[in-house]
Image (cartoon, rainbow, N blue to C red; front, side):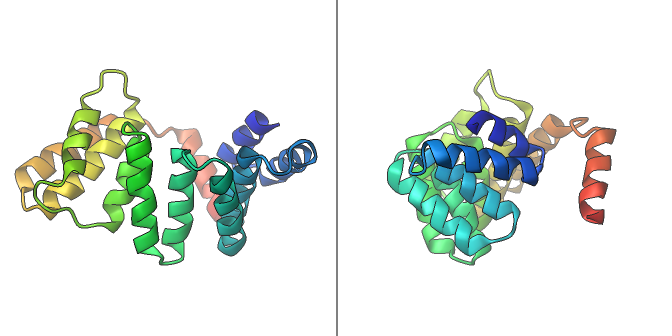
Amino acid sequence: ALDEGTKHLRAKNLADLRKCIEQARKIAPDDGRVLHLAGLYEVERRNTVQAEQLVRAALSRRPEDAYIMHNLATVLISQGKFEEATELLRKAVSAKPTYAEAYHTLAKIMKFEPGDPLIEQMETGIQSPDLSKTDVSFYGFALAKAFDDIGDPARAWKALEKGNAAMAGSATVEDDRQGVDRVKR
């Protein structure tokens, strides 16, 4: 039910996602993965208070799960709780140093200082040979922000170009159609 639920979450098929969560909760109501998925469902419904409660409960059961830390941080950011979100994101990249999306989210809410070790970690991460285009873009955009923060526009521009190049051609006509449909709804 969790794998199926994740597919429905990605497709934004909330009715089927809710059914999967209900099935999973009957089997394992206190499982951190079930609570996490239920929290993400609430995020999609824009119910951030309930989402925060569920994702916090998930994290209490899976305290080293970087993905849950990241998702709780995004909920907290939506509520303006930037300090706690920053702590969680730093913990997430410490637990999973190759978590490109967490660096990207963190870069949006913090100001980098020269010598920040996160910059070196991101520079190392973007060099990984097996990165997806999405992860290259996450690293590239996070590095662009970091270099801009520390006053290095030349390196910021190169990182931005790398992030943009990774995403070139990644959107399809179907993606655009689905986006327009979501806006209409």
